[in-house]
Length: 297
Image (cartoon, rainbow, N blue to C red):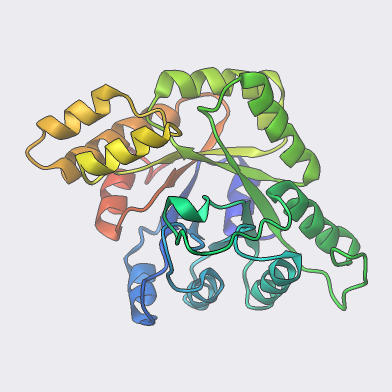
């Protein structure tokens, strides 16, 4: 698969990706401004798919960025679409120059998107990866019917370093690799000791040799945000992070400092193949890239 991200991973270079939250409006100019403000070092931009409520179509945003010569990774979640719509979106994206897809279930709608919405969950991410892999390799759709042309896609999935027991965590990763995942993007990392323990298990299982592990950092902007994530217990945020933000004169600046420190340490852990910066604006991304030494990685 010929994409900047795939080539960087194949070459063994430390990759750098950033997240783009689609604008909550219809102004494509905001995306084009983002494209122009990204550091040249960025390998790809991951377009989120309605993570916290209705925003612009991830598919449309990915197509706009592809038109701006920025490599998009399209997030596709199974929460909102059945298998017919999922296939249609991915085929349409491939026709517009999108070459990488991140397969996710999506956070339950009651946790932020819109509690009134009905979840679909027709298939899970493993089944989505399996179906897309068959599209690429065999040229058939999810029902086994022949396509007129095969898409060429790099497929990825989410990894959850802080979920325990470890045995089930590693088993879930193995299922995604067997289905066809070529890379994993982790949830935001704050607990470095817990992440290092997880990476030990990943390496012991040989998963790092089968799929690239891209570790995420999140520049927190407030104490409130940290407490919300802490309550979800999925990022390993401890009282030390909350206390640092609480004691800082500027919580947003302190959040960037924490992300910088975390990124520096993550890229030194054996088996980590890239850093992903979550939900940061262009200024925050630029600071993290520069201060964490990612510009030359």
